[in-house]
Amino acid sequence: MSGLSSKIQMAIFASGTGSNAQKIIEYFNDNPQIKVGLIVSNKPEAGVLNIAKEEGIPSLVIDKEKFFKGNAYVDELKEKGIDFIVLAGFLWKIPSLLIKAYPNRMINIHPALLPKYGGKGMYGSRVHETVISAKEKESGITIHYVDDLYDHGKIIFQAKCAVEENDTPETLAKKIHLLEHENFSRIIEQSAKNIVKT
Ligand code: GAR
Image (cartoon, rainbow, N blue to C red; front, side):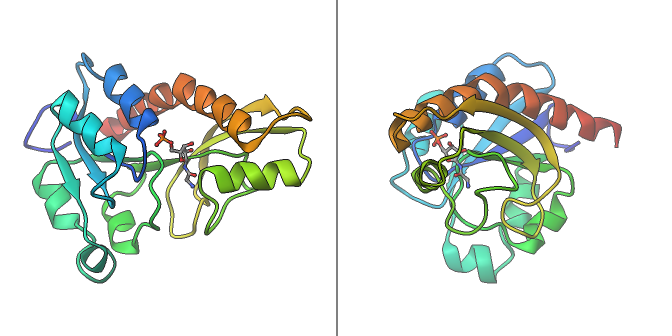
């Protein structure tokens, strides 16, 4: 745990609207052990940054060159006392340097049942379009540890939902978001608590 705070400090990385980030922030609001200490985004106009502002949580907009060719922000995150990283709709691949700095301390949520429908370019509505085109009968969410490959690390949790014949990428996205909002914070809590024991 960081020396800067007795709570486990968590950073949420997000590129978009941040509905998951919002739920996570609310869930950990009064948590005695875990705190959302930082919101990180690669997009200065991302909705998640407004959420950070409204919730009074510090934020950091990262620079592509520095992220991929510099120190991947490892020093900054360590200086800010970040112990655990949650990817909640983060678009960029995480550099090895950062993954190595947070072993078993970085988790991602993916809007499909991995190992299917993951990998480069599989993000947001692209995933749902592909699932529907493939005439899958079910889809769902996967929460997993992050490793050097896209959407590949050890799976922690999955939940399923039906894909009906009349589902569109939009209606499926709604079902998936519901599953994410219902489950992600609880799984984060379990995984983050584990790091105290290691
Ligand atoms: C979520 O559905 C998440 O699973 C997905 O982006 C969405 C972000 O929504 N992540 C990926 O596709 C990662 N490959 P949000 O901004 O409303 O939380």
